[in-house]
Length: 216
Ligand SMILES: [Zn+2]
Ligand SMILES: [Zn+2]
Image 1 (tube, rainbow, N blue to C red):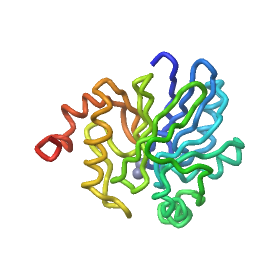
Image 2: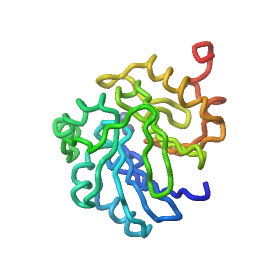
Image 3: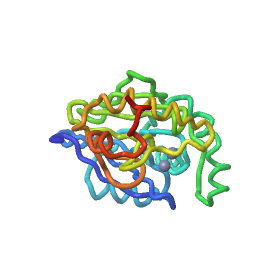
């Protein structure tokens, strides 16, 4: 990945992988999924010496989106994503925050993302894949040039996103992974919303949720 750099900042009691992603050539960056702990995110931005030009949300769950409204104000940037199907989750963040004891504000992004859209970060271009299942509006961002993806909670090392939350759909999740992520190629490395990084190839071969006839 010659031109892409990332710093992972685990945030919230859910240890969500907020990701500072930047273009090494321009030092322009995006904060992806600022679920909370805004001070720690600001520290990581200062340490890396990059200039944040946008916030990106992979989906509307509290551990990914609860700090987005506050960080947008602090940085004076726009929010892109997720897909509009997660609007109901984003508008309920304050109530969700009370239930989990996490400070949270509802947020309306400046730009909804759809299948086939692109998002830029400096000179990087990320393709948008709409991957419903974990939530209806989950999106995955892929740099085909850098062989790299940000997958939110769609897939993890050794697991897949839970589907028991409002709007979850287990069949849709497996379809999203089978039809949109596996074809990207085994060499694609990804950062997921929780836990360590992996590659599409490693998950194709070893992920217990991706074995068996349902995927063929
Ligand atoms: Zn989630
Ligand atoms: Zn999550």
